[in-house]
Image (tube, rainbow, N blue to C red; front, side, top):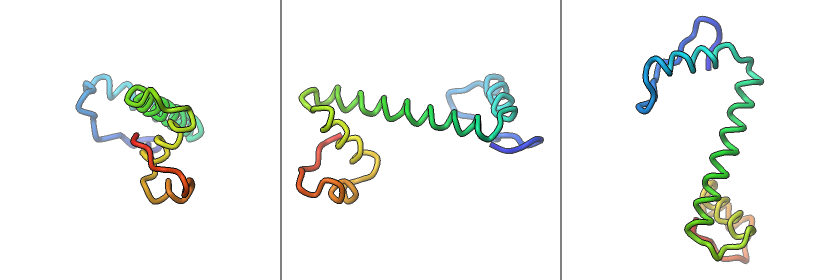
Length: 92
């Protein structure tokens, strides 16, 4: 994110410059640990949304199958086959 005096120059297309300025100011006041916490929470939310999408597209999947499909989505076919070599690849 940057330290004191640093700015974040890329404004997301769906964010107004005013909102981006407020958000940037908040991030710049955070400690590294606080920003890391934000990243972990956003990551967990994204994984949850991805798992929900898999459940929606494949309502017959068990929770274990959702986990495997999400793993494949995140890591690709080769690592998925390495973890579950005797199970078929599942569509995410």
